[in-house]
View (cartoon, rainbow, N blue to C red):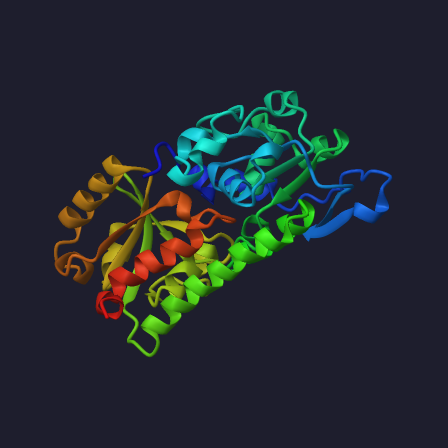
Length: 332
C-alpha cells in the first residue's frame, strides 16, 4: 500500500484547479528538425528536439512508466518517492536515480539542480509556483519540456478515462523514440481491459459509492478517471458528473447522512496504507451498520495512487474492483 499520499496530493486540492491549464510556449527544440517531435498536451504543444536524455518522473507512477519504457538510463531524478513504492520488478532499476523529494513535489531549485530536459507529472499541481514548485513557464525558460498525464489536464480532470493512459504511452513513445515499447504496453493494457469487459458483459451492475475518508470526513468522488474506473469495473455510480456538487470539481465533501441515503451495494474507498484501510473499515462499519455494502461486506479498499492520472494502476484497479463486484465472473 502507498504510504503518505494525502488527499490533496491525490489530486483534489483546490490549488490544483488554479495551477491547471497554463498556456505556455513549448520547450525550444534543437536545430535537428528531422528528429524533433511535437505532441499536444493540456491544450499546448510540447516539443522536443530529440529524445530526452535527462528526464524526471514527478511521482512514482510516472517514474514507473518511464522505467517500463526502458528509459532508466535517461532518468536523472525521481520525486514523491514516499507516496508509493515502485513495483518490485522495476524498483532495482531506480536504485541509483537521485531522489528529489519524498512526500511532495520537489522545489524548483531542487528540480532544476539535476538539469533535466524533460519532466513527466500526473497533474499540474506539481507545477504550482505558489507552493515553491517550478511552474510550466519557469521550466520553459530553462528549456525543459514538461508533460502532464492526459487525465490530469484541467480540461480532462472532470471527464478523464482509464484509456487516457494510452494517449500518454503513445506520446511518450514518440517523445523518447521507443514506439514499439509503448505499443506493447498499450496492447497489454487494452487486452487486460478487454478481459474484464468480457467477464462482466451483460451482468447486472451493483450500485457503488466511491469515497475518500479522513477520520470522520467523507469525500465523495463523482467524476474524472475515478468515475470511469468504477464504470469499467461494472459498477453503477451513485454519484455522477450530473450531480450539482460535481459540476465544477470531481470530488465533494458530503455528510454521512447523504451517503447513507444512497445505500450503495458496495463502497470503494482509496487508502494510503494499512492503517487508513482499517480505520476506514472501522468507521464505515460503525457508522452505517444497516447499509447494504456494510451488511454484505462489500467494502473495497484500493490504493489511492492507482487512481492517479497516467498510471498503469488505472488498469489493474479496474480488474481489482470488478473481481469484488462480480466475483463469480472470474472463477470460471
